[in-house]
Each structure stands twice: as structure tokens, then as C-alpha cells.
View 1: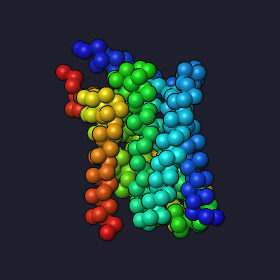
View 2: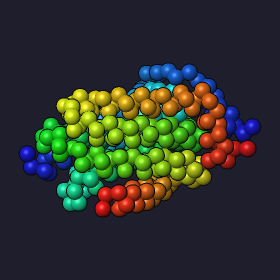
View 3: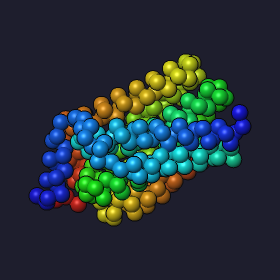
View 4: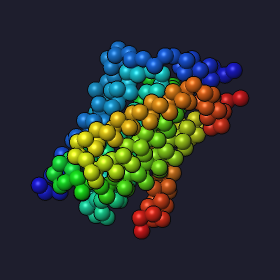
Length: 114
Length: 152
């Protein structure tokens, strides 16, 4: 299978899984509990499953090591959004906090993987 | 006590429950936005893998692409306090996400991919839900609110 076609299939599956996890989050209360599903591994699940299915489990393993670093950055990102969303509006606060994700993920990658 | 703080406490005191009626309140456009964000970040991860290798692509499997859409829609519908509560749950979910990645990294070497990812998904939900109830049973949420937000 061509890499572009595999990316397209992964994108479709990821989009559908994101919607599915969003629907679960939408029906749950309280909001703090529902928020767990805002950080659900929807994109990761789609990508790793399809990579393993079409290219073998060995091809998915390097992605998971990168994902561990990305997850640490995600923890920092979510903690930063608590601060930024409270002080700015949700859109500005959550987009500004992306800087924290890039800073942490980039730094950790350079230190651990290079 | 501010009305914002009171609203958060009332929300926190609700029992964990499912309200299927909330699905009817959501517009198709809201889900279309989330679908688009999910598909887009998956494409970014795929292209990053092709260009810079799978480890760089893997970073984007944990990129917070969906949260801005979720928090913005939630703020619009239910106010900033609820959006902050959702973000607070996201911190717990992110710890679960890290556990998912570690379990997947370990089990993909030995077990079948389907079994490895199923186990990783199970660990994600166990870690996230376990941490939620641990935080709820103690006063850690209150401490978090006082530390990071403007409550008195």
C-alpha cells in the first residue's frame, strides 16, 4: 500500500475515533470526569493499529517511543491550559498553550532521541 | 465565595453518570470540527513520519489537537468554568495517555498488535479513572483550583 493511501486511511479512522471519544465525553458528568476523554488516545489508536496491520508491529514501535515523549508534553500542555484558559478565552488560552507542548516535546526529543 | 467557584463545586459534587440527552444537544457541525481536527493531526503525524522518521511522527500521536475545539465549544455553550473543569480532567486523561504509550511500546514487542493496543486502552482508562477518583476522594482538585486559578 502506498504511504499516501495509508495516511489517508489513518486520517479517516482517526477522525471517526475522535468523534466517538467526543461523544462519550459529551454524555458524561461531572465535567472534570468528562474531561478525561479530551485526552483520549483516539489518533494514536487509529494510527498504531493501522501501522501494525499494514506494515507489521515492528513499524509501530518507534512511533510509541515518540508518543511517550509527546504524552509528557501533553500533561504539561493540559496543566498550562488550566492557567491560560482561566485568564484568556478558551480558544486563545488553549492555542497559546500549544507553545508549551512544542517546547516540552521538542526539548525532550532532542535530549532523549538525538 | 464567587459564583464561578460555587458552580465548580456543584459540578464536582455531581455523581459520575451518563446523560444520553446531551447527545441531542450537540450539533453535527461540532462533531465535523472534531473529525477535521482528528484527521488533520493524523495527517501531520503521517507526514512527519515520512519526512523525519517514525519517532517524530509518534510525537504528534499525543498532540493536543482536539482540546482547543472541545474547550471553545464548551465555553460557548456552558461557560468558562465548565471549560476549565474539562481541561482539569484533561490533565488526568493525559497521564492515562502516557500510560497508554508505555504499555503499547512494551507489549507491541511481544503480543499481537490488537491485544497490545487493547491492553494499552484498558490501562489508559484504568489510570485516568483511578486518578480521577483519587483526586476526588482527596482535596487535590481544590488545591489545584487554588493554585492555578483565581479563587480566593
